[in-house]
Image 1 (cartoon, each protein chain N blue to C red):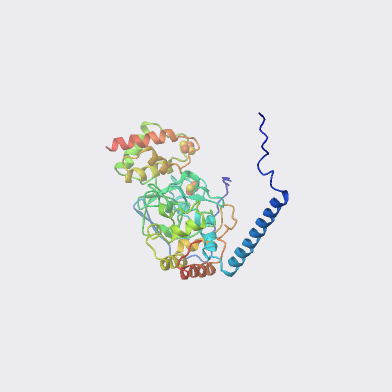
Image 2: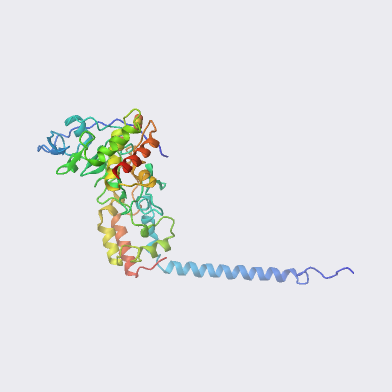
Length: 201
Length: 171
Ligand code: FES
Ligand code: FES
Protein backbone atom coordinates (compact mmCIF):
# COMPACT_ATOMS: atom_id res chain seq x y z
CA UNK A 1 0.00 0.00 0.00
CA UNK A 2 1.22 3.44 -0.83
CA UNK A 3 2.43 5.67 2.01
CA UNK A 4 0.13 8.68 1.97
CA UNK A 5 1.82 10.58 4.80
CA UNK A 6 2.70 14.16 3.85
CA UNK A 7 6.29 15.43 4.14
CA UNK A 8 7.22 16.76 7.57
CA UNK A 9 6.32 20.41 8.05
CA UNK A 10 3.88 20.56 5.27
CA UNK A 11 1.01 20.83 7.81
CA UNK A 12 2.38 24.16 9.26
CA UNK A 13 1.21 27.26 7.46
CA UNK A 14 4.04 29.19 5.72
CA UNK A 15 3.46 32.30 7.74
CA UNK A 16 4.35 30.50 10.97
CA UNK A 17 7.80 29.71 9.61
CA UNK A 18 8.24 33.31 8.44
CA UNK A 19 7.25 34.63 11.87
CA UNK A 20 9.77 32.36 13.56
CA UNK A 21 12.50 33.61 11.24
CA UNK A 22 11.68 37.26 11.92
CA UNK A 23 11.74 36.64 15.68
CA UNK A 24 15.12 34.93 15.41
CA UNK A 25 16.61 37.81 13.40
CA UNK A 26 15.31 40.39 15.90
CA UNK A 27 16.78 38.42 18.80
CA UNK A 28 20.18 38.18 17.08
CA UNK A 29 20.20 41.91 16.26
CA UNK A 30 19.37 42.84 19.85
CA UNK A 31 22.16 40.56 21.06
CA UNK A 32 24.65 42.17 18.70
CA UNK A 33 23.69 45.68 19.85
CA UNK A 34 24.09 44.66 23.49
CA UNK A 35 27.45 43.00 22.82
CA UNK A 36 28.67 46.04 20.92
CA UNK A 37 27.58 48.38 23.70
CA UNK A 38 29.31 46.24 26.28
CA UNK A 39 32.54 46.09 24.19
CA UNK A 40 32.43 49.88 23.80
CA UNK A 41 31.92 50.48 27.47
CA UNK A 42 34.83 48.15 28.38
CA UNK A 43 38.27 49.27 27.21
CA UNK A 44 40.04 46.70 25.03
CA UNK A 45 42.51 44.51 26.85
CA UNK A 46 45.89 46.30 26.44
CA UNK A 47 47.50 42.95 25.77
CA UNK A 48 45.94 42.89 22.30
CA UNK A 49 48.19 45.83 21.34
CA UNK A 50 51.14 44.43 23.28
CA UNK A 51 50.82 41.22 21.25
CA UNK A 52 51.27 43.11 17.99
CA UNK A 53 54.77 44.03 19.19
CA UNK A 54 55.68 40.62 20.59
CA UNK A 55 54.54 38.87 17.44
CA UNK A 56 56.23 41.28 15.05
CA UNK A 57 59.11 39.62 13.15
CA UNK A 58 61.65 41.78 15.03
CA UNK A 59 60.65 39.97 18.24
CA UNK A 60 59.31 36.68 16.94
CA UNK A 61 62.38 35.78 14.86
CA UNK A 62 64.25 35.01 18.07
CA UNK A 63 61.24 33.40 19.78
CA UNK A 64 60.75 30.58 17.24
CA UNK A 65 58.85 27.38 17.78
CA UNK A 66 61.74 25.14 16.79
CA UNK A 67 65.49 25.04 17.23
CA UNK A 68 66.45 27.46 14.49
CA UNK A 69 66.22 31.23 14.58
CA UNK A 70 64.13 32.99 11.95
CA UNK A 71 64.98 35.94 9.75
CA UNK A 72 63.42 38.70 7.69
CA UNK A 73 59.93 40.11 7.54
CA UNK A 74 58.38 36.74 6.75
CA UNK A 75 59.96 34.71 9.55
CA UNK A 76 61.91 32.46 7.19
CA UNK A 77 64.48 30.12 8.75
CA UNK A 78 67.87 31.74 9.40
CA UNK A 79 70.13 31.28 6.39
CA UNK A 80 72.84 28.64 6.81
CA UNK A 81 70.62 26.53 9.09
CA UNK A 82 71.89 28.29 12.20
CA UNK A 83 70.94 26.20 15.24
CA UNK A 84 69.84 27.11 18.77
CA UNK A 85 72.57 25.15 20.60
CA UNK A 86 72.46 23.97 24.21
CA UNK A 87 72.42 27.47 25.75
CA UNK A 88 70.30 29.29 23.11
CA UNK A 89 73.43 31.13 21.90
CA UNK A 90 74.20 28.96 18.91
CA UNK A 91 75.80 25.58 18.29
CA UNK A 92 79.40 24.73 19.15
CA UNK A 93 81.63 26.55 16.62
CA UNK A 94 78.64 28.47 15.19
CA UNK A 95 77.85 30.84 18.02
CA UNK A 96 75.58 33.87 17.61
CA UNK A 97 78.41 36.23 18.55
CA UNK A 98 80.57 34.88 15.72
CA UNK A 99 78.59 37.27 13.50
CA UNK A 100 76.29 39.40 15.68
CA UNK A 101 78.09 42.10 17.61
CA UNK A 102 76.69 44.28 20.36
CA UNK A 103 75.43 46.82 17.79
CA UNK A 104 74.02 46.80 14.27
CA UNK A 105 76.46 46.62 11.39
CA UNK A 106 74.82 48.86 8.83
CA UNK A 107 77.54 48.19 6.25
CA UNK A 108 76.95 44.45 6.04
CA UNK A 109 73.36 44.48 7.29
CA UNK A 110 74.12 42.07 10.14
CA UNK A 111 71.99 43.12 13.11
CA UNK A 112 73.44 43.28 16.60
CA UNK A 113 72.66 44.11 20.22
CA UNK A 114 74.14 43.06 23.56
CA UNK A 115 73.72 39.36 24.40
CA UNK A 116 72.31 38.51 20.98
CA UNK A 117 70.68 35.09 21.39
CA UNK A 118 67.50 33.07 21.05
CA UNK A 119 64.83 33.09 23.72
CA UNK A 120 64.62 29.73 25.52
CA UNK A 121 62.27 27.07 24.14
CA UNK A 122 59.82 27.82 26.96
CA UNK A 123 59.43 31.29 25.44
CA UNK A 124 58.53 30.07 21.96
CA UNK A 125 55.83 32.46 20.82
CA UNK A 126 55.51 31.54 17.17
CA UNK A 127 51.98 30.55 16.19
CA UNK A 128 50.32 31.52 19.49
CA UNK A 129 47.07 33.47 19.70
CA UNK A 130 47.25 36.68 21.78
CA UNK A 131 45.52 34.82 24.63
CA UNK A 132 47.98 31.93 24.52
CA UNK A 133 50.90 34.34 24.26
CA UNK A 134 49.65 36.24 27.31
CA UNK A 135 49.38 33.01 29.32
CA UNK A 136 52.91 31.93 28.35
CA UNK A 137 54.37 35.38 28.98
CA UNK A 138 53.15 35.66 32.54
CA UNK A 139 53.86 32.06 33.53
CA UNK A 140 57.01 32.19 35.73
CA UNK A 141 57.85 28.63 34.73
CA UNK A 142 58.06 29.77 31.13
CA UNK A 143 59.22 33.36 31.39
CA UNK A 144 62.50 32.97 33.27
CA UNK A 145 60.82 33.17 36.68
CA UNK A 146 59.76 36.79 36.22
CA UNK A 147 56.90 38.53 38.02
CA UNK A 148 54.67 40.88 36.02
CA UNK A 149 56.71 43.81 37.33
CA UNK A 150 59.95 42.05 36.32
CA UNK A 151 58.50 41.62 32.84
CA UNK A 152 57.83 45.35 32.49
CA UNK A 153 61.37 46.16 33.64
CA UNK A 154 62.82 43.57 31.26
CA UNK A 155 60.89 44.86 28.26
CA UNK A 156 61.59 48.45 29.20
CA UNK A 157 65.33 48.19 29.83
CA UNK A 158 66.83 45.13 28.19
CA UNK A 159 69.10 46.18 25.32
CA UNK A 160 68.20 43.19 23.15
CA UNK A 161 64.47 43.92 23.59
CA UNK A 162 65.11 47.60 22.77
CA UNK A 163 66.72 46.52 19.50
CA UNK A 164 63.19 45.94 18.16
CA UNK A 165 62.79 49.73 18.02
CA UNK A 166 66.17 50.37 16.35
CA UNK A 167 66.77 47.36 14.12
CA UNK A 168 69.26 48.98 11.74
CA UNK A 169 69.58 48.36 8.03
CA UNK A 170 69.40 45.18 5.99
CA UNK A 171 71.93 43.90 3.47
CA UNK A 172 70.42 46.16 0.77
CA UNK A 173 70.92 49.21 2.98
CA UNK A 174 67.16 49.55 3.58
CA UNK A 175 65.95 50.31 7.09
CA UNK A 176 64.44 47.25 8.77
CA UNK A 177 60.87 47.74 9.88
CA UNK A 178 60.75 48.33 13.65
CA UNK A 179 58.00 46.95 15.91
CA UNK A 180 54.69 48.76 15.38
CA UNK A 181 54.24 50.81 18.60
CA UNK A 182 56.65 53.43 20.00
CA UNK A 183 58.64 52.14 22.98
CA UNK A 184 57.15 54.59 25.53
CA UNK A 185 53.61 53.67 24.49
CA UNK A 186 54.49 49.96 24.64
CA UNK A 187 55.79 50.32 28.21
CA UNK A 188 52.63 52.26 29.23
CA UNK A 189 50.49 49.48 27.77
CA UNK A 190 52.51 46.93 29.72
CA UNK A 191 51.99 48.88 32.93
CA UNK A 192 48.28 49.15 32.22
CA UNK A 193 48.14 45.40 31.61
CA UNK A 194 49.93 44.74 34.89
CA UNK A 195 47.51 47.08 36.71
CA UNK A 196 44.72 44.87 35.40
CA UNK A 197 46.42 41.89 37.00
CA UNK A 198 47.89 40.65 33.70
CA UNK A 199 44.42 39.81 32.37
CA UNK A 200 44.57 37.75 29.20
CA UNK A 201 42.34 38.40 26.19
CA UNK B 1 63.52 36.02 -0.94
CA UNK B 2 66.92 34.52 -0.15
CA UNK B 3 68.69 36.76 -2.64
CA UNK B 4 72.26 37.32 -1.64
CA UNK B 5 73.71 40.50 -3.00
CA UNK B 6 77.37 40.65 -3.75
CA UNK B 7 78.79 44.04 -2.99
CA UNK B 8 82.15 45.58 -2.71
CA UNK B 9 83.27 46.59 0.70
CA UNK B 10 85.27 49.74 0.95
CA UNK B 11 86.46 50.84 4.30
CA UNK B 12 86.98 54.57 4.63
CA UNK B 13 89.13 55.70 7.50
CA UNK B 14 87.11 58.27 9.49
CA UNK B 15 88.79 61.66 9.95
CA UNK B 16 88.16 61.75 13.70
CA UNK B 17 89.70 58.39 14.38
CA UNK B 18 91.07 57.63 17.78
CA UNK B 19 94.73 58.60 17.72
CA UNK B 20 95.78 55.68 19.97
CA UNK B 21 97.09 52.80 17.88
CA UNK B 22 95.33 49.57 18.79
CA UNK B 23 97.64 46.70 19.70
CA UNK B 24 96.39 43.27 18.79
CA UNK B 25 97.73 39.88 19.77
CA UNK B 26 97.65 37.84 16.60
CA UNK B 27 99.13 34.35 16.67
CA UNK B 28 100.80 35.22 19.99
CA UNK B 29 102.60 38.20 18.47
CA UNK B 30 101.79 41.83 19.31
CA UNK B 31 100.85 44.03 16.35
CA UNK B 32 100.62 47.83 16.70
CA UNK B 33 98.20 48.71 13.96
CA UNK B 34 97.57 52.18 12.64
CA UNK B 35 93.90 51.54 12.07
CA UNK B 36 90.54 52.77 13.24
CA UNK B 37 89.22 50.62 16.09
CA UNK B 38 85.97 50.19 14.14
CA UNK B 39 87.77 48.59 11.19
CA UNK B 40 86.69 45.00 10.49
CA UNK B 41 89.28 42.68 11.99
CA UNK B 42 89.65 41.01 8.59
CA UNK B 43 91.26 44.08 7.03
CA UNK B 44 93.56 44.57 10.00
CA UNK B 45 94.71 40.96 9.69
CA UNK B 46 95.12 40.91 5.94
CA UNK B 47 96.14 44.44 4.99
CA UNK B 48 97.94 45.64 8.11
CA UNK B 49 99.35 42.50 9.75
CA UNK B 50 99.99 40.98 6.30
CA UNK B 51 98.44 37.62 7.17
CA UNK B 52 96.57 36.76 4.00
CA UNK B 53 95.62 33.15 4.78
CA UNK B 54 92.29 34.46 6.08
CA UNK B 55 90.05 35.10 3.09
CA UNK B 56 87.43 37.66 2.14
CA UNK B 57 84.34 36.10 0.61
CA UNK B 58 81.29 38.25 1.21
CA UNK B 59 81.89 40.79 3.98
CA UNK B 60 78.39 40.07 5.26
CA UNK B 61 78.73 37.01 7.52
CA UNK B 62 77.33 34.80 4.80
CA UNK B 63 80.22 32.58 3.74
CA UNK B 64 82.64 31.94 6.63
CA UNK B 65 85.80 32.30 4.53
CA UNK B 66 87.08 34.92 6.98
CA UNK B 67 86.80 32.72 10.10
CA UNK B 68 89.52 33.20 12.72
CA UNK B 69 89.61 32.35 16.42
CA UNK B 70 89.01 34.94 19.10
CA UNK B 71 90.10 33.43 22.42
CA UNK B 72 89.84 30.02 20.76
CA UNK B 73 86.27 30.48 19.40
CA UNK B 74 85.55 30.72 15.68
CA UNK B 75 84.27 34.18 14.70
CA UNK B 76 83.85 35.97 11.38
CA UNK B 77 86.60 38.52 10.98
CA UNK B 78 84.54 40.55 8.50
CA UNK B 79 82.04 41.35 11.28
CA UNK B 80 84.25 41.54 14.37
CA UNK B 81 85.85 44.94 14.73
CA UNK B 82 89.42 45.67 15.76
CA UNK B 83 88.21 47.12 19.09
CA UNK B 84 86.45 43.81 19.92
CA UNK B 85 89.79 42.02 19.65
CA UNK B 86 91.86 44.35 21.84
CA UNK B 87 93.14 42.43 24.87
CA UNK B 88 92.06 39.12 23.40
CA UNK B 89 93.86 36.36 21.51
CA UNK B 90 93.39 36.34 17.75
CA UNK B 91 94.48 33.17 15.96
CA UNK B 92 94.55 32.84 12.19
CA UNK B 93 95.19 29.86 9.94
CA UNK B 94 98.88 30.80 9.93
CA UNK B 95 99.17 30.50 13.72
CA UNK B 96 96.88 27.67 14.66
CA UNK B 97 98.69 24.91 16.54
CA UNK B 98 98.25 22.06 19.02
CA UNK B 99 96.92 18.51 19.09
CA UNK B 100 93.53 19.26 17.53
CA UNK B 101 95.02 21.44 14.80
CA UNK B 102 97.51 18.68 13.95
CA UNK B 103 94.73 16.07 13.79
CA UNK B 104 92.63 18.27 11.50
CA UNK B 105 95.59 19.04 9.26
CA UNK B 106 96.46 15.33 9.03
CA UNK B 107 92.91 14.29 8.20
CA UNK B 108 92.57 17.07 5.63
CA UNK B 109 95.74 15.85 3.93
CA UNK B 110 94.97 12.15 4.08
CA UNK B 111 91.46 12.62 2.64
CA UNK B 112 92.63 15.24 0.16
CA UNK B 113 89.77 17.52 1.19
CA UNK B 114 90.81 20.68 -0.61
CA UNK B 115 89.72 21.56 -4.13
CA UNK B 116 90.41 25.21 -5.01
CA UNK B 117 91.15 26.03 -1.37
CA UNK B 118 89.53 29.44 -1.12
CA UNK B 119 87.08 28.46 1.65
CA UNK B 120 89.40 26.04 3.41
CA UNK B 121 90.96 28.42 5.89
CA UNK B 122 87.46 29.07 7.24
CA UNK B 123 86.56 25.36 7.12
CA UNK B 124 89.68 24.33 9.01
CA UNK B 125 89.40 27.06 11.65
CA UNK B 126 85.77 26.08 12.27
CA UNK B 127 86.59 22.35 12.37
CA UNK B 128 89.33 23.00 14.95
CA UNK B 129 86.89 25.11 16.97
CA UNK B 130 84.34 22.30 16.88
CA UNK B 131 86.74 19.47 17.80
CA UNK B 132 88.35 21.53 20.57
CA UNK B 133 85.02 21.66 22.38
CA UNK B 134 83.41 18.48 21.11
CA UNK B 135 86.03 15.79 20.41
CA UNK B 136 83.44 13.24 19.22
CA UNK B 137 80.96 15.19 17.11
CA UNK B 138 77.96 13.47 15.53
CA UNK B 139 76.90 14.23 11.98
CA UNK B 140 74.32 16.64 13.43
CA UNK B 141 77.01 18.44 15.47
CA UNK B 142 79.15 18.73 12.33
CA UNK B 143 76.19 20.07 10.33
CA UNK B 144 75.38 22.65 13.00
CA UNK B 145 78.96 23.90 13.09
CA UNK B 146 79.90 23.64 9.42
CA UNK B 147 76.68 24.42 7.52
CA UNK B 148 77.45 28.10 7.68
CA UNK B 149 80.82 27.77 5.90
CA UNK B 150 80.21 27.81 2.18
CA UNK B 151 82.36 25.78 -0.20
CA UNK B 152 81.83 26.68 -3.82
CA UNK B 153 83.66 23.50 -4.86
CA UNK B 154 81.26 21.46 -2.69
CA UNK B 155 83.86 19.56 -0.70
CA UNK B 156 81.30 19.05 2.05
CA UNK B 157 81.35 15.24 1.99
CA UNK B 158 85.12 15.14 2.41
CA UNK B 159 84.99 17.81 5.10
CA UNK B 160 82.57 15.72 7.15
CA UNK B 161 84.67 12.57 6.65
CA UNK B 162 87.84 14.43 7.61
CA UNK B 163 86.29 15.75 10.83
CA UNK B 164 85.27 12.20 11.78
CA UNK B 165 88.78 11.00 10.88
CA UNK B 166 90.41 13.73 12.98
CA UNK B 167 88.12 12.84 15.90
CA UNK B 168 89.13 9.19 15.55
CA UNK B 169 92.82 10.10 15.50
CA UNK B 170 92.41 12.29 18.55
CA UNK B 171 91.23 9.14 20.37
S1 FES C 1 83.86 37.21 4.32
FE1 FES C 1 82.09 35.95 4.18
S2 FES C 1 81.63 35.63 6.24
FE2 FES C 1 83.23 37.02 6.37
S1 FES D 1 87.53 24.24 -1.92
FE1 FES D 1 86.94 25.68 -3.40
S2 FES D 1 85.51 26.88 -2.36
FE2 FES D 1 85.88 25.29 -0.98
